[in-house]
Amino acid sequence: MEMKLDCLPCNLQQILEASRLATDEADKQEKIMCEAVQLIADYKRFGKPPVLGRELHQLLVKHTGVLDPYKEIKQKNIEESLKILPQLQDFLSRKENKLYWALKIAATGNIIDLGVYSDVDVEQSVMEELGREFAVCHVDKLKEDLKSAKSVLIIGDNAGETVFDRILISVLGELDIFYAVRSEPIINDATIEDALASGLEECATLISTGCNAPGTILSECSEEFLDIYHKADIVISKGQGNFESLIEEQRRIFFLLKAKCPVNADLLGVNLNDYVFMWNGN
Amino acid sequence: MEMKLDCLPCNLQQILEASRLATDEADKQEKIMCEAVQLIADYKRFGKPPVLGRELHQLLVKHTGVLDPYKEIKQKNIEESLKILPQLQDFLSRKENKLYWALKIAATGNIIDLGVYSDVDVEQSVMEELGREFAVCHVDKLKEDLKSAKSVLIIGDNAGETVFDRILISVLGELDIFYAVRSEPIINDATIEDALASGLEECATLISTGCNAPGTILSECSEEFLDIYHKADIVISKGQGNFESLIEEQRRIFFLLKAKCPVNADLLGVNLNDYVFMWNGN
Image (cartoon, rainbow over all chains, first blue to last red; front, side, top):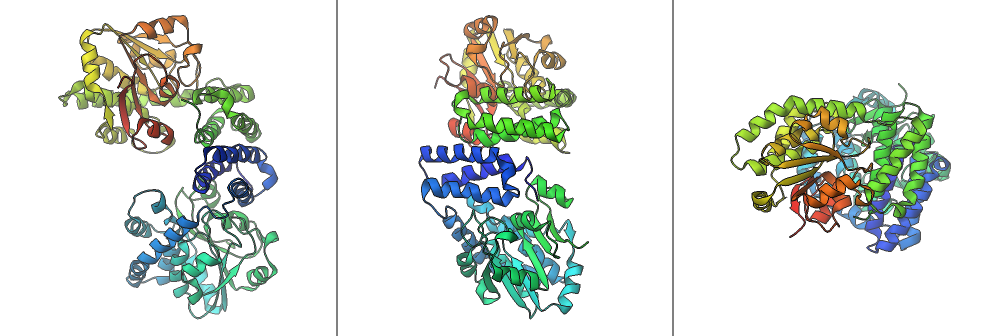
């Protein structure tokens, strides 16, 4: 997906928040923002939004030396998610269409970062959001594919959400499950370390995409990842960053996300903040 | 108030919305945004946020020829406000502390633009917000000042909100009331035309500040306005733009606003979206 004009203020807001996590020094924050505005002025050069996202992140590293400004936030998100895992399991146990609701749980994990910035009750917010059904849901296609599938690749998104994905994996059946994460810390996206802290190694083979952008840019991914990506019977891509970087690809993918920005909502034909589980083969 | 880093993404978002109101042509929107980013990169040159706001607005005029992209929105806001004026009067008639609640009505008028962008029920939203009391309210100081005052200057903010201000004026008593507006269309701020459409000429002497920024930059104001500003016994400044441009001035002013941005909320020592009626003499 090409960058849209909406991506410019949104990226500028995101780097401002990240710069404040990385340093308390006002002059450094100012330098980061000044250079960020210059990068954003040249936005066409970056093509897809996650590529600009990475360039902005690298400004942080350059000016503060902090490689992972979201480290504490990610840890807190994982802890909060592990705390409510029993409630998620209980929620699913009371549902008949387990695959649908496991997908819904995995998609809802995307809101776990809300709690970090405010005093909202994480458990309550998650339970409320769980009840909101998908605006688009190609679960029947997934059910059909699962009948003959031997392997599934899940491309993960944020740390914390990773814990919710264990619920999804638990209903997929006896398959080879691969769970892919970013190669390096970038915003609050999950890395191997975060996947391990989320307990994902118990139910999936963890791999790095080889890409350090907040998305999955195939031309930058490792051969190991690309081999799994092409051979997997089913690929489930989670979140907006992966959606933005994979939506134009040829292979069949299920996109599982909450449409948190108007550009993605528009592209998906849904309302802002709707949940979507969309197969790109329709 | 000096520009803060938070002003950069916020201004960029605002000019994006305005560019879409001014033109449907994508290439023009893109040109506006590219030049907007360049202006924002040089943000320190502008000093106060309303000065940058005006420069960005002038990009719109340059690229589209549209002098007043918010014209229809302003008209709609005024119409909606006139429609609920009887409900506002009824709300006030049931209150004992009329000055407090008339101030609250005038401050709540600031949310009238919400309805334009979504399907929310304007009357319901306004009535809900009316019930939220001020986080800071120096109404006792105003009561005291009104005992000896002969003249009041209100510096207006948005079109639509102007209608709500008629309620405030109705409780001030038999005084010379001056109501000041921007000299030219800028964002959704009120001009003389908007003040007339709101019916303000029935209860106040309408004047232009002489300044065409979305705030009141005294060094740019007309002599006529400055004379009233300095001589008025009481000055009530409405909204964030006026607050940002007048907060460091020497004369005593009552600031009446909803703290819609984190920078202003922080400066006022309140939470985001709190309502404030603050005298700067404390």
